[in-house]
Image 1 (cartoon, rainbow, N blue to C red):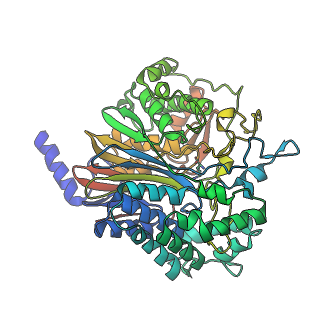
Image 2 (image 1 turned 120 degrees about the horizontal axis):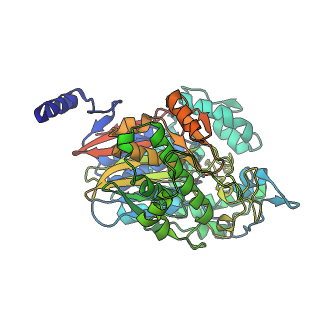
Length: 558
Ligand code: DON
């Protein structure tokens, strides 16, 4: 029996078909990048081939995505990076945007009334960007190639131009109406008003010049001097409040990753101001008490238990989490096995529990952030998620700077006491205050086995991020999926309130859905959830899973 399995395994390797899995995954030996743009993944691999490590590659990929993937790749936004070196302790880099110094909890009110426009779509929605400072801090700690070399590929892409993909052209169609009031945005993303078409070469000279200043001067090329002048001028023109002091005072932070374990694997993820790591560990702790492998992928029992874990973790997220520099949080308790056991005691395996709506529901978020995963030849690993918040952020291009500004201030709560059933939240942990980081769901995550990197995972998708990352982990650890299958399999999302399970269309059987409904769950079908980018390290081989829910993603390896 053993011999037969071994033979089958060998044959599978020859055919490049993973044993016991559905989809082919890309494989390579030395280094790998999986990102939302194939050309940017290739930039990362080229850096590694030149001797760069995973941090060097990640910095180069992040700057490249700011050119190739403007929906979310950015220098005008912020994000998180979890780094696991082959030696030393893992580190989480927090380069989340901060609220400008003149922010206050009631800044979204006009004549006492909450204004969605002001909160999400105005110059006031722009947070102080963190990306450049964050990438620089990670590079200072662990990079090996010269800083300017890591920006060179992005500068070249911006200067010489990139070919507009189908995906980029289509996403621009959606955003152009929102850009009409900003001439610099229209100028950047159209040919004098005509939308960029798939196949044409698109040059971004202002962005190239800004990247060159960053290459030459480091963060000072962004937070001071000409780039800062351009940002502040646009703020003054459009009624924004970011000042030179806000920019010069921005600091990225090193934080200790949130740690947990799941069936013998170690999980490292992003701590607050992301809610992601805490919620993922809490859900994994709850689910560890059930045999999900025996229940099977997509079974009503597995989906019910996952939903109940999600419901509880998202309720805690809403109740407790915010910027750790401003808010006290019971993190040790939320991530403990004992607490998970208590929560399991409240789960009826046959029946849906009930999300009490006496407090609030969550506002809708758009689906544009981007994640990429990197592993190098020494098995250093980077998991990086960054964002402008909405697709193309605030849609404001800094005139002369050539880059988009985020609208991340929209991730702060609406205002004190403004909790209501339409989706506004007014709890205090996540109200705007000067210098504060808005709560995030971004969850770059690394899973280790026996102290070595085993899985790098992450995704965009607003609040769904946390559940998408959870499911990529369950798919691999409980259901034996390879990297590609882990990404391909259908996903669900429950976020406490509204009390509904969103399920990807055509991904689960109607029988399963009926069984869940019979248990008392409300189901809604959705087109798709998230865009996960996964690398697995299996017996020395790197396996990449790129999400086909996106247009332009790509695995590159060598
Ligand atoms: O930080 C957050 O959680 C959100 N601003 C992320 C937004 C997002 O993922 C949009 N979608 N893909």
